[in-house]
Image (cartoon, rainbow, N blue to C red; front, side, top):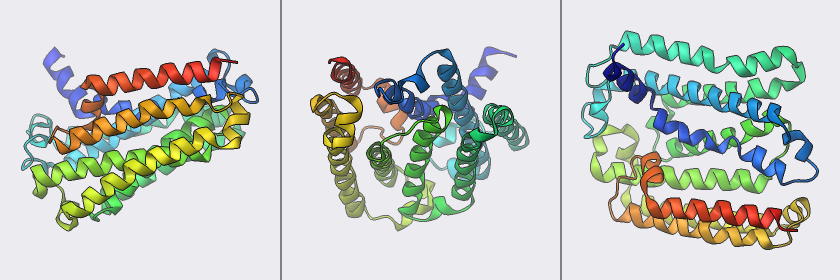
Length: 304
C-alpha cells in the first residue's frame, strides 16, 4: 500500500477530528486532584482503560464520518472544502467506504464489550458508547437537517464524551463541568454554522432555516454562558471542598476567557472556523490560552 493511499484513508477517517475525544480523559485528571477519588485514577490500569475508551470513541466517530460522507457525497461536491474529501472526489468508492465504516464501528465496541464481559457492573461503559452511536445514527438519519437542533445534538455528543470518562473509572464529574462542556461545544458548533452560512449555504440543509442575526445572538450567548458556568464551577462550595484549593481555581477562568475571546475574534474575522479542530491546533493564541490554563490548573490544584 502506497503512502498516498494511506494518507487518503487517514484523511477520510478524519483523524484530525479525534482531538474532540480529548475531553474523555478530563474525568481522570479531575479524579487525580480529588482526594476522595484519587485511588480510582492512580496507576497504569486507569490510564489504559481511559485510552481504550478514547480509542472506542475515535473508531465509532470515524465510522459515522465515513457513513455520512457516502450519504452526503452529492452535496459535499458543491462545498469548496468538502468536495476534496476522498469519497466526494471519487477517490474511494462508496462500497469500500461503507465496509471500512462497519469495521470501525465493530472495533469501536471491543474495549467496552471486553470490560463488560469481565465485569458486569461496568455496563455503563458499554451503554455510553451505545448511546453515542444511537445519537449519531439519529443525527445522520435526519436530525442534522433541522435548524438549530443539529448543533444541540453535536453539543450533546461532547457531554457523552465527558460521561464516558467517568464510566471507565467509576468516578463522578461535577455537573457544572458537564454543563460547561455542553455550552462550549454549542458555542463552537454555532460558530461553525455561521461560517458555513457565509461560505456555502447550499452545502448543509439546516442552514436554509438559520438566520445570520440569530446565529450571532447565539454565538454571543453561548460564549458568555460558557464563561459564567465555568466561573461558577470554580467557586461553588462543592468544588472548593472537593479539591481543597480554596478559590485559587477561579484563576483558571482567565485563560478560559482569553480562549473564548480569541475564538470570537477568529469567527468574526472570517477565519476558517468551519474546521474548529484545525483552528484549535494551529492558532498560537489558542495554544497559549491552553498552556496557561494547564499551568494555572496544576498550580491551583497542587498548591496546598
